[in-house]
Structures are given as structure tokens and as C-alpha cells.
Image 1 (cartoon, helix red, strand yellow):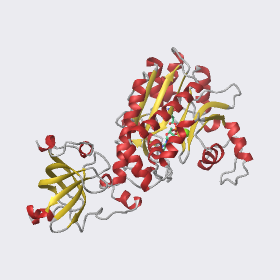
Image 2 (cartoon, rainbow, N blue to C red; image 1 turned 180 degrees about the horizontal axis):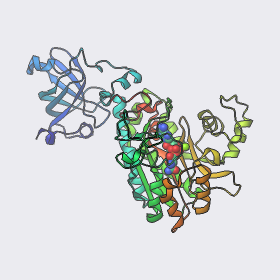
Image 3 (cartoon, helix red, strand yellow; image 1 turned 30 degrees about the vertical axis):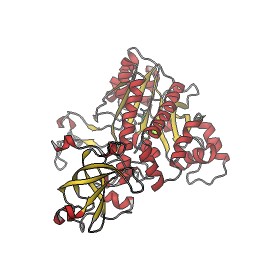
Image 4 (tube, rainbow, N blue to C red; image 1 turned 135 degrees about the horizontal axis):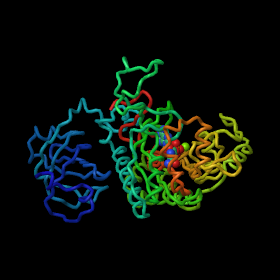
Length: 465
Ligand code: 4AD
Ligand code: MG
């Protein structure tokens, strides 16, 4: 099979088997030359770099070479040679070329270089063909792999939380409904409300906002666990940092308090960034050159010092004393906005910040209450350019306190009886957090819009592909 014989451009660019016969398949980035000699820049996605194919034009059928245009897919067999040209060490001297798929030069949307990211977003089906998106996708893969490696090496078990659920883990009411009922004629109860007993699952179901509650059940049996799956939020946030469908990594650890939780968050983030620097240097250098000349420095800079750790109350004091005119005025009790988070990280401390002990009113029901009765053991990790990259907490492990909080927030007990059960039978102190995968990729790639770090972004009014 042709596919088995082909070699990856990534490997050939490092090879010194000059004179050997090779086959590469890939997509043509450019073709230039004259009636005697042509140079094809070919890319197969294995690496950001192209391989140069040198064509002795008179040896080839003119009609065939006409089909070798930007965007076409070809197979080249030839000999690997040391390159005389600048900017590459090897090239292929073509012996034969065949066309898998041509690409009409008039119609192909990526014919020219230099399209804006906004334009490329509109053609999500062709976006992987761009250098930028190729680099982002390879880095995304490397980060997903590194996450599993990190946890596996540290004794964590990977848990698959359900995507369809009856519970609103974050209590924010921003869930997408999952139903098979006819929207025009749903079965009704006597009081006119929809009768979900007749729905597929016999109850109301939604797409999950978080795998945390299920991860907690597993942690209270397996000790160290994590989830890594898609999560969904029907919040109408049209910002460069919000998606309606995003991936979240949620470790959950029995016998961890909030300080252990912070240690893990810091160690994991540093591991992932170091992994990217060590394994994705070609793609990072490309993105640095194209978009963000501080990228690699910034990645290195977060590895140097310990992250700053401070209480919410201290953060409020710093913001109040800053003399800055924030759009959202600062006072104890407010939820920190992106402008506040970025002030702390980028202006005040100039390094990542971990804030804990938030007012209970602005955090979810499951967080452990402090002795002061008004703050909970919540943890947010704030990063330069991103703001919140991680949200987590120590969990309330006391049955009576958890039940009181659930009642206070009017959460129906019938929805969370199973969660309460874990505090009834063999409860244990435990903690966890959620890392937004796309926010991590935003930081690592230096891209500025979250829509550019996920293959098919889901945002309000946008689900074309
Ligand atoms: O702070 P959040 O809402 O925390 C939770 O969901 C907890 N259950 C996590 C846990 O303790 N196991 O979300 C966690 C992280 C945020 O810090 C952010 O990085 C990301 O998920 N995130 C989003 N990313 C993209 N688009 C959105 N709409 C996001 N909402 C949260
Ligand atoms: Mg949060």
C-alpha cells in the first residue's frame, strides 16, 4: 500500500540517508520556478516545516504539473538529497509525481498567504491546512498527551464522567437541555408544566457543566482520580476566553486539603508548560514569529518562581489601594472580573497568582466552609493574558454542613441524594480543581482568541461546522 511506504516529512527533514529513494504524500503550499526547474513546498502536517521537492520540468508531463497548485494533494517519489538552497537541509529530487486531488486555483480559499484569523475562522473546514492551525493542533495534542502522562505518572486514575446528566454541578443554571420531546407538542402535567417522565430518561436531563461531582464519587474510592472531557455552558458570554463547549481536566484527590490542592495545581501547570517548551519548540517558534514575540519568554517566566498565594480579602485590599479606575468597582463580596484578575497578575505581581478563601455567596454549594462562616475554601489560579485558568476548592465533607448549604440554596435534595450519601458513608477530606483545556492552550500558544485553539468552536450563534 502506498500509505505504508510513504515517509513523514518530519522524519525526512532530520534524515541524512542521502541518495535513498523516498515517497512523501502531502499538500502543496507553493510552487515556483521556470520552464526548466520547479520547486514545490510540500507539507504533510507531521511538522510545521515543508520539504522542498525539486522537479526537472522537461522530464514531466506538462498537464500533470499544471495540476500541482497550492492546496492540491500529491504523492512524490524521488531521491533524498542534501539541499543546496537556503533554509533547508534536505530536499527531494522528484522521479515521479501523482495527483491525489487537485485544487482549483481560482476557487481555493487559501490560495494566498496572509489571511486574517477572523477570515480563516469562517472556513473552519479548511483551517487545519493553515500553518497556524497546524501548529495549534499539534500543541493541543501534545498537551492532552502530557496531561494523561502527568496523572498516570503520579498515580491518578482516569474517570469518564457522563456527558448527559440530571445535576447542575456549578449551580449556575447555564445548562443545555437534552430531550427527545417534540418542542411543539410536549406532554404536559395537569398544571401545564412539561411532563419529563415521558422523556427519554424519564426525567429532565442536560449536558454536563462539569464532571466534578462524579469525580468526587470515584476519588472517595480510588483516592486519586481525574476526568478529561467535554463540558457545556449555555452562558451568553461572547468573549475571547469563553466557549459554550470546552474541555476540562478535573483532578479530585482524597485526603488533600486546599494547600495540597494548590501544590498540585502549580506543579501540574509548570509540568505542562515545560513539556510544551521541550516538545513543541518548532511550533512555538513559528507562533512566536507570527503572533507574539514574547511567547517563549513568557512560558519560561512562569516556571521560575513559586506562584503567589493570597486570600481573596488581601486581593480586594490590593485592588482597592491600586488607585485604578476599574469598570466594575471593587468591594469585599464582588466576584473578581477579568480586569481585576489581570491587574493582580500583570501589573501588581507580574506572575501567576492563586487566590483562595472567597465569600461563600459567589462560589458553588460544595465548597468547604471556613470557620469564619462567610468564606469558603475556594481556589482560583490566575495567569497572565488569561485571567482564571483553574477553578477549584476543598470540598465540604461534613454531612450536616453540606445539607444545610444545599437547603439554603434551594437545591432539591432529590437531585443530589447520591452526592450527600458519600458524606454519610465513609466521608473523607478531599479537594480538586478544574483546568480549562482551551485556556491552557491559549496561554501556551500565545493566541489571543479561544476560538482559534479548538477545532470547531461553539459560541453563541455559531455552530456551523
Ligand atoms: O471555575 P469552573 O466553573 O469550575 C468548575 O467547573 C469546577 N467544577 C472545577 C472543579 O473544581 N473540579 O471552571 C473551571 C475552569 C475555569 O477556571 C476555566 O479555565 C474553564 O474551566 N472554563 C471555561 N473555559 C472556556 N469557556 C468557558 N465558558 C469556561 N468556563 C470555565
Ligand atoms: Mg471559576
